[in-house]
Image 1: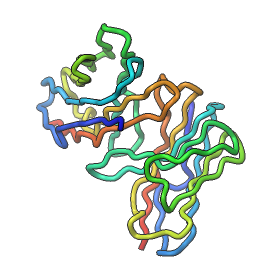
Image 2: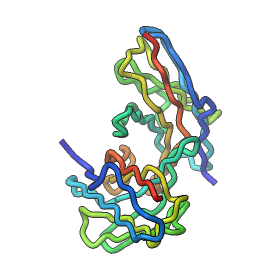
Image 3: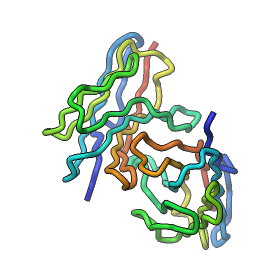
Image 4: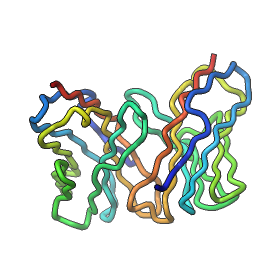
Length: 113
Length: 113
């Protein structure tokens, strides 16, 4: 079975500090895509960042970056200069081509002012 | 702005009722999905559809059915609602390959009493 594990149910960070959310996954495929989604209290799932597994370079989107370790099947999200608006549930997910997306259980991030 | 619209944000139904959750997308996407979101479990796939009048079971289809009569609309049906179906339901859509992620609706929080 293909699975995604987020080992941190809750995380907390001070405003302006950096936090890293962990994610590991399990697939036998070599070609797949990884995602981090943010779900604020509004419940709208927002795509934060996307990584193609065949690319070694880690994806970045402004203050958000990933550490993708393909051999270790690890895909962590780093949020730099944390802001109050970053407080949300964060879901790690992946998709193998033409299959459905698999999600982790989520990490609830609290940002302290 | 592309959208996935779920008809109800909150819904309260009685045990044994037949419940319809409606989802409409305006992006001409081929794929549509229904997920259930529960604390500590993340998003679990109920049903999905890759084409009109086509449906496939996900990981937890028991107690649910779906209908896709038009490309833009994907309905989730609870044949006889039970209290263990109290949950958040998220609809999503994607283009054919899905490799760029899914677009989600803002969810329907269903309570069965």
